[in-house]
Length: 248
Image 1: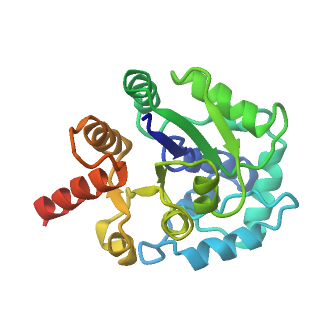
Image 2: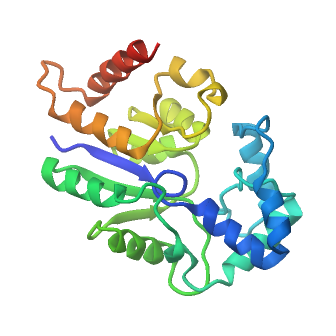
């Protein structure tokens, strides 16, 4: 049976932070933008902080993601997102975080017959819809005919509704939702310091990887493994368990 995998875009595959920093320099000036980039190391994002940032963004459609990588006031966030909404096809201007990762995902999906569904919480901007911009961006990076949903609400409920086996995300709170509201296996792409990783992540069975490359390697290994247990959840659990013991 084909794996059904949900991939988040921003923070996992797409470098939204650099694009927003570029636009912040346009709005506030280069010096101010550099200062915003210097987020104190102690101010690691939490689920509560992300929620308050979402509320502070105060946008009418409720789809604006929090700016957890930039040190900005709520007023600055609103001003920046107002500017970004006027940028034609903004979402097509992003770079990959890991060059070639989308093309490799496309190759693995073809070879292993995976069903990939991209999930994102992106506000609309000038130009094409956020969905169309995102699809064009994925195609330009090597993934043909991408299935993509601009979503709201719990990632877990979305995973349950779409019958996903795995959800790959960069935000712990989204992975917690997947654990709480679905039977999917959440994989957290965590590029920050391991010391900043929420302690509940591994206790709740969330797989943690440092890169998309590592994530794809584990997914391919789990999918290819011959096992009496057909559950991809259990195969991944064993792989992550072995990885944790090796690293420890």
